[in-house]
Length: 85
Image 1: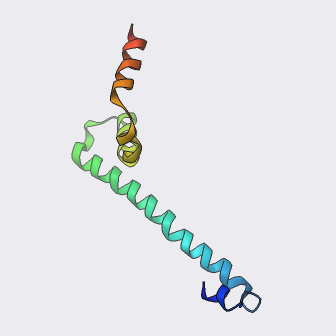
Image 2 (image 1 turned 45 degrees about the vertical axis):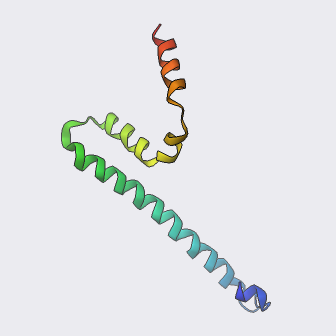
C-alpha cells in the first residue's frame, strides 16, 4: 500500500509482484497444513482399523467441516431411503 500511495511502482516494478506472491504462499501453506493435521488426528484416533477408502472419506468430512455443518441431514436420509427402496 505504501508503494502505491507514494507512486513508487515505476521505481520498484517487481516489488509489487513479489509481495503479492509472498502473501499468497502463506495462505496456501496454512490450508495444506490444516488438512494434514486433520488427517493425522483421524489416523491417531482410529489407528490401523480403517481401510484407505474409509480413511479418505473421513478426512474429507473433517477438512470440509464448514460445508458439513450447512447440510440438512433430513435431506440426506430421505435421499438414502429413496435409493434403497
